[in-house]
Structures are given as C-alpha cells and as structure tokens.
Length: 327
Image (tube, rainbow, N blue to C red; front, side, top):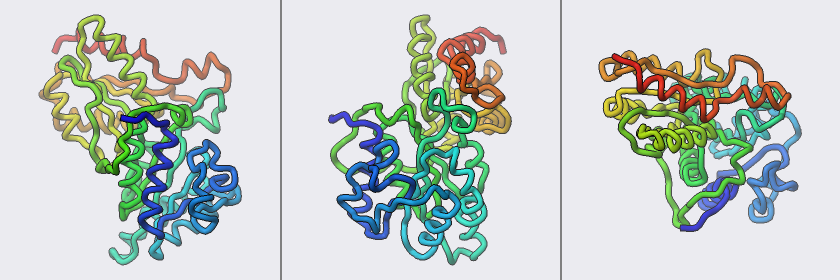
C-alpha cells in the first residue's frame, strides 16, 4: 500500500468530497493563495477556484459566522483554523449557533459543517498557542469531536465528517502533518464514534488519542521487553465515545491507564475514569491511572515545555504500578 503524509491524506479527503458535492467548500486563513499555513490545501485553489477555496481575514468569529450561516442554508463548509488556540475567538458561533440550532429550531435547521485544524502543543510556541481543546468541545451537546493520530484515520474520518449532517470539530496536530502512513488509493470511510485497537494485549489497557498515541505505543513497546503485554486503544472520536470497546478491553486486561494531552481537571480521562468505575468496577484489579499534561499553561522555556507533556517513562512507570498492585 502507498505511503502518504498526514497533510496529503487530509487534502485527499477534502478533494474527493468537493469533487462529488459542489456544496462543499473550504475557507480559512491562507488556505487559498498560500496553499495553507501547513500546506494541507496545496493545489486546491487551482482545482476548485476562489469561490470554493476562500481566503479569509484574520477574524475567526467573522468567517466562522459566515460558514455557519452557509451551512444553515444548505451548503457544507469546511472551516480551517490556523490553530484551535485561535478558534476560541469563534466559540460563540460554534457553541451558541452551530451546536444548538437543530434543537432550537425543532429539527428544522441543521448545521452540516466541519471545523478543522491543528490542536494542542507543537514545541516552543508559548502558552497561548499550546492548549489542547478536545475536552472543552466534547462538553458541548450537539457537536461531534474527532481527534486523529495517523494519515489513514485522518482521511477516512474527515470524509465521514464532511458528509455528516451535524457540526464536527476535527482536531489534528502541527507536529504530525509530515508523518507518513499507509493510505489506500481506493475510496474508504471510517465511521464516526468507533475507536480502534491499535495494539492487542492482555495485561493492561492503555487508552490515548492524537499525538499522545505515539507515546502510548512507544511505551507499549518498552513494556513488552519486560513481558508486560499492553493493549493500546486509539479513541479517534472523543464524542460520541466508543465506550463499549474500552469496556471490553478492560474486561480482558483488568487494568486501565489513560494518556492524554489535556489538562487533568474535567478532562477526557476524567469522563472515562468515571464511566469505568460506574460500569466496569468489578473488572478492575487495580485503580484506574492517568497521565495528563501539567495543570498549568505550557511555557516557552524548553525544559518547562518538556516537563509539561506526558512521556514514555511516565507511562511505563504508571503501568508497572498498576501491574503490581493487589486487588
């Protein structure tokens, strides 16, 4: 199977759906003339023209409002944010209009729209450019939240997001746009709301998503050297959450460790931990443990940036702790 970059997989997903449906269009900062801030939309202006690949001012609230209005009137916009750290300026439209209009209109007015772009930290970018937002958006009823870790899932889930009739927040990572992975040439879709068992194991379940999947999988490789078999689950979709796959894995391994880039308070791991103690407590042989980012802004200094994110040694140490605890 061919190997393509993460950015190419996203581009193919948008191109394929735009060729099939003239209602689909892309708008955002530098998506057209500059070929995208991260070159995700490279070549799309030439193919689809300025009416369907639209450069916007640096005014997230304004162009998001235009896109939401277009979606409510029958079009299918894809809004690219240069980073989700900037998307907070558009939160009024996402929270108060896109997510609520179907309910407020009694099912008469939908909002088929995709909000996509890089999320979370990407090296030394400072506190205002390094926030992970999955749990914040997942807290909003009426929005689906996707957070992908590899090119194959990126393409299949973005295509599903574009054809979905509900608003979808689609989160990527700046540090993964150049990552390469196997992606079929033939068309495929990945259903929203299904996580993936990225690695099978029998001793402990590790749940993660987005770029923290690299940490989780690397930790599983290290643990295998010590005869600890870790099952690694990639959530892919944060809301709706594929709870059943997580529960079935915990039934098998009897231990759960969650690795994520979120701040710890009211995070995705908080929700998963609550659910497992509510519905899967009898299957646990050790307390649920989680590794999150530090409960603080991510600073620019390289030593503080390195200390902020979960690490492979942290995951290995935590897994060993749950392995050796008695029930």
